[in-house]
Amino acid sequence: MGVKIGISLIAWQNDDLPELTWEYTTEGAMEDAARIGYAGVERGRRMPADTEGLRAYLDRYGVSLCGGWCSGNLMLAPADEEFGAIRQQVEQFVALNAPCIVYAECSNTVQGMMNTPVSQRPKLSRDEVTGYAAKLSELAKRVSDTGMVLAYHHHMGAMVQDAEDIDWLMEGSSPEVTLLYDTGHLHFAGADPAAVLDKWGNRVSHVHFKTVRQSVLDRIHAENGSFLDAVAGGVFSVPGDADGCIDFQAITDLLKAQDYDGWIVVEAEQDPAKAPPFEYSKLGYEHIREICGRSGLAIED
Image 1: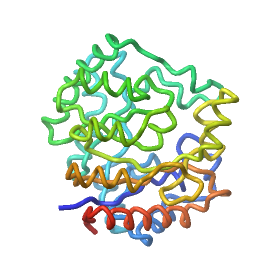
Image 2: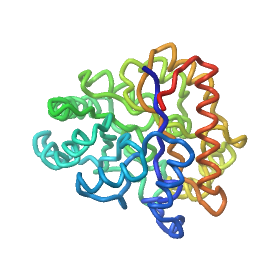
Image 3: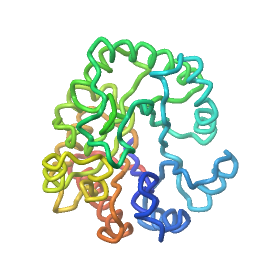
């Protein structure tokens, strides 16, 4: 057993800021990812929607489906109703042997609002998060009964964003609720990525690797910018970028100590005019292989 290295195609195909990546096709992105050596890709909006069409599409490029975003509405809907809303994606991911759905609450997030500062994100009380966690546990159990894993994505601009929010969500939910661990979002939120992994590694089922350019983050905080301002400004980059501030060696050391054997996914949305997708995605892939080797973390090709 070992980890597998995947990538999200948002470096080539940004769904939130499509104007950044209009020159790039999904087919070209898939070819690049496979040529670099990535074993899988997360599902993007511009991939085939039907299961057999998506299967053939993945097979054409020799990659697996290693997850994909699922916009949640559980704050507003009962768990049974929400399961019905996401059931098609869940069943598709089961059929394609994906490791998880990447679930995030989007009913009240500000992450996609260009003119809304990320500082204005919804901040819930502990009791409110605990109540939500109970509903999320119901949903995750329904998803688990199909053979799929629900991996909850803490995200900038969302109600579960920082270390305190994650603590409350994990403490209030059942084991069926697992955690998508994202290094870049944690650092952006003011958390210590290594400390969060050390505390909740037993609940982590999926990993996103991206680093943060501290100078851009400092400017966004100073100007009270939005999440999309930060993305367009280049706040995120791939592991191995000298401009980044996250120590990924410490992270892979912890993953090894915890016997993690899931996916490590590069997910670093950038302006391709400033950060050529193939070049940066290759840098991220090679850096992950290097640090996993030093940590003794085996890689499944």
